[in-house]
Image (cartoon, rainbow, N blue to C red):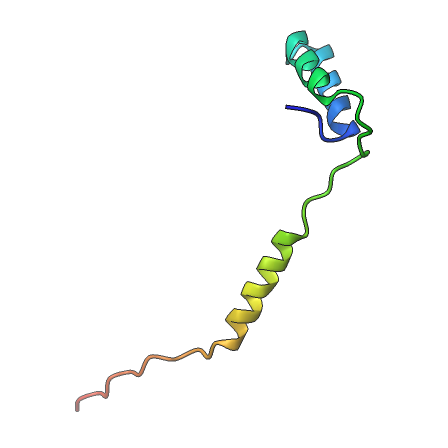
Amino acid sequence: MPFKSKAQRRKFAELLVNGKITPETYEEWNRETGGKLLPERVTKKARKKAKKKAKKKAAKKRPVRKAKKPARKK
């Protein structure tokens, strides 16, 4: 799996130095990335936020029905 950002590559290099991953793992990821120009950071897709907003709007439009309480017997 290739690196997605420069920050991710730095994190893996830190893990390699600390001995938490093997040199083979780091080299595999580095090889698959190739010479691509990577962004500094990767942001999350805005699509998920749009879905949440749409759900909130739909929930607001629906009227809330209250259950009727049964009449008390005397």
